[in-house]
Length: 316
Image (cartoon, rainbow, N blue to C red; front, top):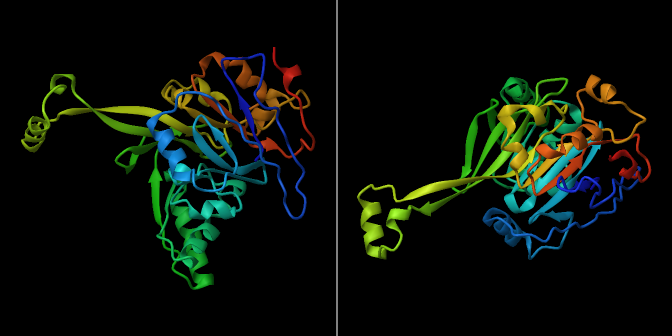
């Protein structure tokens, strides 16, 4: 996986250099495992437990196993197997097919191209229909895409298509929900923020016996209060403006923030990045004080970077 893990609290160093590899037939990409020794959230621990018996793949970042592939203009698909979800689908990598939830950030082909294959393959394997989230502005066209493939393929392509507007939330399960947030790209786009939700007993009921708690609950008394924590944020393609958006404060607090950094050196300017709706590494570094995430995973590096690129010289 093309990746760079950078600690916003240490501007003078990165925990991994940016490694960008040429595509070779058949594709063989070296994968690195990055671990952060830190206290994990209950949601991250559950994600880790769900995958601990499987062969290790990808990386583990802030307690979350992460897999996938991201090369700007070619394909992007970032997978959180412990949460049973993928962000964007790229060319539909095999590992993404087993994820029940798919979040599409925008309609560019390198992010959505594999969508029909993802749904069709799940049907072929007799898996349950997936839930696919898309920006509300493209839902109609995505529906037409599936209709065209149904006509050609003579298959059902069963799925649950959910349109979300920026700011809207959707409950994935009792302990997990998603909110769409605003991003700034050349075409309509949005990111997704995953929250963990747990309930804690209200202080006034602490110390009561089990039967007393049960009776209160049976009588309709609300005995708990929710604790909602931002766990995973995925930007898709965007300019750095999303960082400055006052509505996106929770995004910058997510335990893991997956964000684009298409350009990383001085061969491409910030202005060039913005002209195409993308982010330059220097913009991230200059805003480092805004991030409160445990880890930031940089993705979507330009395919122009064919060799290892050291970023140290570009950090003040």
